[in-house]
Length: 156
Image (spheres, one colour):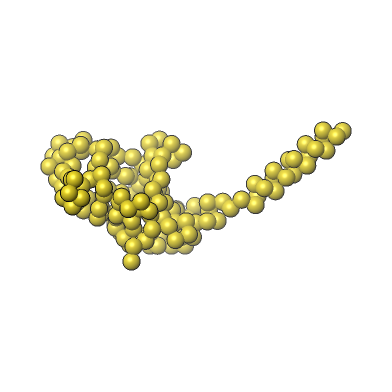
């Protein structure tokens, strides 16, 4: 009998703790798709991008990326790792590297996008969401759980 009461108390405590935790939806504050538009910089300063309305979806243009500039920190590298040989001679400066993000009203985030890494030549799936005053962009292969997020702050 005592184990039964203790088990019930533990279960009730866990249930209360779980329901008290804020969900990512509660933290996400985006109320309209255009809130993603603007210039953003990664918290570590390694990437600076401009998110823009691409007519039915949202995309991002590279302004700066530590991994895509030469040792001088200013000259952009060529897109030598691109799987399309015709694009290997282009500069990575200003490339549109996030494409096709669409607003999901129910989840209040942008989903279904693509993220092209000029540093690796790979294209991954992408999603983005606003959490407080920050934007989290998640790039992943297969499932979002196996991806990596970059946190950005808006640049005035």
